[in-house]
Amino acid sequence: MGNIYLVLALLSSLSIVLLLRLFENKGFDRYVIIASNYLVSGSIGLLLLSVKEFPDAGVLIFGVIIGFLFFISFSVFSFSLKKSGIASTVTFGRLSLAIPVIASILLWGEKPSLTDALSLILIFLIIFLWEKKLSNISPLLLLMFVLFGVIDASMKYFKIKFPLVDNNVFLITIFYSALIWSWIYILFSGRKIKRVAFMSGLVLGIPNFFSSYFVLLALSKNIPAFVTFPFINIGIIIMSAISGRILFTEILSPKRILLIIFGIVAIILLIK
Image (cartoon, rainbow, N blue to C red):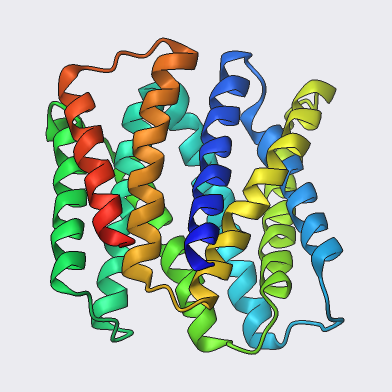
């Protein structure tokens, strides 16, 4: 069952990438889209909430902080999609899997098997070889690396620190916190709120919620963090590249086709 949650998390995350790229091509205001998306994400959490409980101080503070990081990371990611393209943005962003993987092994005592270790090495090699030059890494992409990695690791930390707290309580706290942060920015920046951008964000909020929701469910099924995040990250790289070629006419070189094949092999080894 856990592997099904991994696949659903992957498909939800891929939907976010494609929708953001589509909205950017149409010239919609990314900040209005991001702000309105959190309204739907938090509301879905409320609808799925099975117990009535207010988060305690620890969960509330943690959720507010992660909500702020959600807003910042979404902003950086959206801007990079427009500046660097779908493949480069996704590739460098997904390098962040190093943070939860290292934390998984060093801090939380999860032990990968030899096959797991080989697949992880292969995944990192694929990511490093994906781009032509490592010198192309910009401060924007490095910032994305840190933000994405900390957010991913926070999901595992939540399951360890607050095992009895309903996942939806945590997600509601995160998304409504991000909603507040993003609308504060919009109001103080004086941005114009256009209906089409606002409505686009509402659509984006659906996969945005479920990308985190299914990750937490996978972790709840005791799937190690060193499996969960590499699977999702390398899966998004592969599927985003293929989607970028089909939908946005981005170039898919022979080298990347070969790396995609190796990526599929790595995934098979990881979820064997």
